Structure formats: C-alpha cells, structure tokens
Image (cartoon, rainbow, N blue to C red; front, side, top):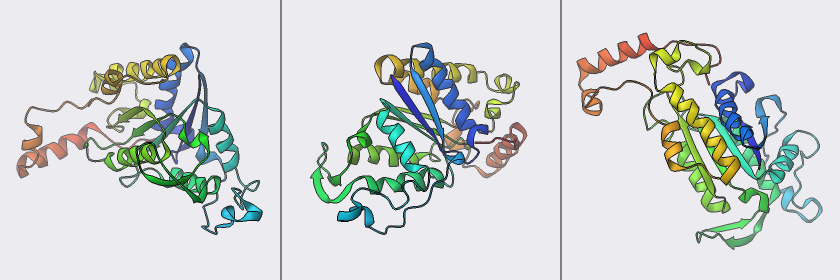
Length: 261
C-alpha cells in the first residue's frame, strides 16, 4: 500500500503536524506500507491565476506554471499513491493557506466545461481519476474547543462528495500546545492519555496499510480529549467567575514553544 502524506504546516518538518504524520507512518511501515511525505513548505508553489488557459485548445489541462514550480510533480506523486493523507494544522479556523494554494492548482487538471454528475448526485466538472483517490484528513490545532476544526472537517467532507473520493480516515488532534507538540518529555505526566493517543495513531497507520481504512474506534481514540475536564464543563465555562479561573489554569498548563503546529 503506497501512502502519500501532504504536510501543509508552515513550519514544515519541525511542527506537530509532521510529528503526527510520523506516528501514523510508523504504524503503516510496520505493516509493510510504503510511505512518503511531501512537505509543501519546502516547495515552490505559485498561486492559480484563474487565467483559464488550462481550458483552451492549445493548453488543455496544462497550467502555465507547469515546469516552473513544483506543483505538477506533487500531482504525479498523488496519482501514483493508493491513499493520500492531507495533513494540516488549523490556521484561522481553516486549513493552511499553503494547502489551499496548492489545491487551487487542481483546476488545471480538469475540464471545467465537461459537466457530469457525481456518485452522490452533485453536478460537477470532469476531473482526473487520481483526484478521486481514497484519503485521510489529519487535522491538528492548539485549541481544545470542538468548534475549532469544524470548517476544515466540513471542507474535506465536501471534497469527498464532489470528487467521489472515499474519506477513509479522520484524525483530529487538539490541545497541541498542552501536549508539548510531541517535543516535551513531561507531556504525558500532564496528560496521561497522550500515550494512548499516539498509540492509536500508529494503529491507524497499521489499519491503512492492511485494510486501506481507519476503524472508527481507532479514530475515536486518536482524537480523544487529553485535557482533564471537570463534569458539567460545558455549563460551568459560561459562568463568568468560573470561566476566569479556567482561563488562568489553562495559561498555567500551556506555554508557547517552538514548533507549535
């Protein structure tokens, strides 16, 4: 099983996103998976100009930047993979601008005037077969609120529907700063469940390599909360004095570190 991870963290290979990819791939490679990481921060990626030349006769399905930057080479790797892992931290409640700029360039690979119906009954245009590859969304963030990654999760579900691309895994890892971004040896003392979380990431990789899909039970373990939360937290946090104390406690439990996400 060939698994390609697209690491879209602006921190490249130094952030928490890469740390989580490595955990996933440790499990995959232990089961014979062939894994590769593409780090977008290391590449030259020009933005789509919306010039429309890729839909003209003389430049059909070819971007004006082909051969002038690294995007087409990554597309070729995606075409060769069996499963694609889109890995992104949450920046301003969405995927990174780096990933969005990269994915915008997919426009040049399809035919905007050749309309079709997707398997889910949506009207869309023609796309190359490899855009419909099974994929995993790996999302990480510092905040512990469930609302934080919702836009990104929704985006990938829409991607799945329009591209007829099976979403074979969803891994959401919050509380990145509290967990030490994978670089703090004391993190598991603060968060005893962290070891179970990282083991679940390895199990997820194993499942991808063997069956091509992450089990829901594994997703749940990998995405579980690691921050000790008192009962009735959802109600208590709306009481002003309690909220102030919670914020003070959160500040004590986390601090900025290099390699955030």
